[in-house]
Image 1 (cartoon, rainbow, N blue to C red):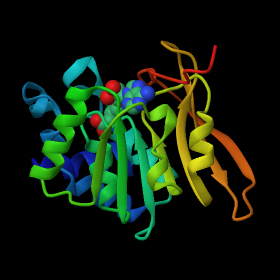
Image 2: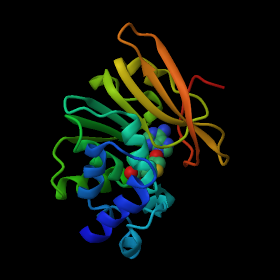
Image 3: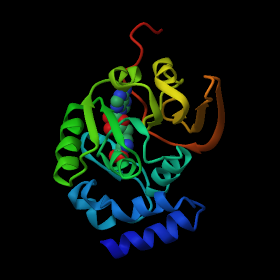
Image 4: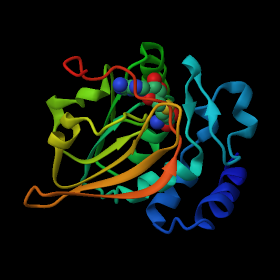
Length: 213
Ligand code: SAH
């Protein structure tokens, strides 16, 4: 599997423009085949999304690498992920930062990811079952926020929980359509700027603001 993983990193990730050596190394290390459904493990190193429990999907490896690189992870960073799913993105990020907090709305997935991350020895990841729309205020602020389910607007709580100097990578857009991946940055002075990075397709963020329309 390590050979196939190395080949995937060269052909599908480095060759397509991901240049951050730490991110490439993380993609070489984390055993993606352990995070997909067992019957899909043989295809875990082809560059496409794969089914996981609960009718959800684990993103294609290139997108995981791309989002991780955009977040510019540093060893001392504290990161928040919304949409734990299999736990794969959290595992990749956990090798690059101090701690990853991750929130998953489907109880079965939150439990599965907790058990798997523990079994694989990822000690600096905390998984919580809940609605990521509200972020995880108890551990805020975060240097990095990665959102791996698409809301139709940026959840206000996430902007609040982004630290000065922080980076948020988030797909935004209507359900069942192409969304846009955005990189949102907060300056040291608290000013927010954003740019559109790429068209993407993520599962919708469910739950949401109970006080909204
Ligand atoms: N990052 C995951 C893949 C994410 S798939 C991985 O590496 O495997 C998107 C996930 O977001 C699904 O597991 C879905 O259940 C979850 N999700 C959807 N809406 C959510 C919400 N409001 N809060 C937390 N998780 C949510």
